[in-house]
Image (cartoon, rainbow, N blue to C red):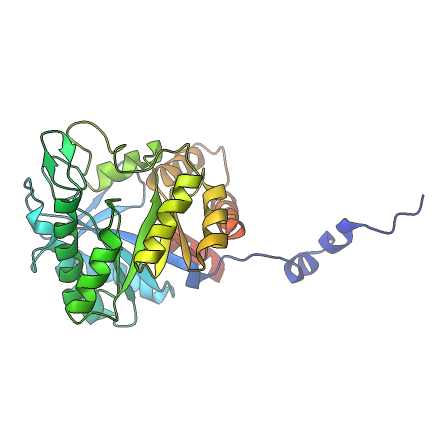
Length: 323
């Protein structure tokens, strides 16, 4: 029988495969998360995340230079404060660690897009993303402090604020406060579909943000719920989000796909700490090819609908793409 349709024809050579490739990972897609900490002279490794460090402000400059030098357009800042308290006061202090890091980054590399994580979990002594009453996490009272945090980040020079707390109504409240305080130009990148995931373990070590009681299932999303994720996304869109994040990435390709089709905004996939740690651990054993696995995973995110990729592999990916 004559076979007229032969899909393999377009796979015959590397040149042909490149010509018909549907999705690409580009350096311009990358956002690199950074952990900044109080003190001086610190570049401390995170044990569960090889290649990831806590940087004090005096050690932050060289890694910012590396990010900019490799053409990565954006960083996402997380802070480890000098002290914590029940109200997370260092989150919204004008001299807080993230606020200082924003100012340093914008001074050293004005072209770098600086995104700040807006949450309280790294700053509260109980480790939850909002204020607590007993063991109940308060919503509206927490939103007030998240608003103060976002405005303080904008005042420091942030280009984008990224609320990751999953409190109801925080995107609209932050948008209104930014506009009222003269920061209408600052964008909101909402963690719109953030699941109560087991993939966050290494991050909680990196950010020293593990809850001291209970868990985050009353405000982060149930991993079983896709339709609810779309409702969360569309609420944030209605409240004024400019970009949205789906977190984690690996197990949530369906949510990425549905989010991109539904919301009409740029969508970021957050390739989280557990995904990074698993790849690093398997690569260290020689069980996988780290470069190929990472690029395949990122292409999967792009194929599912992601426009932007938040990844701890960003520096390596930029180097691989240049090669």
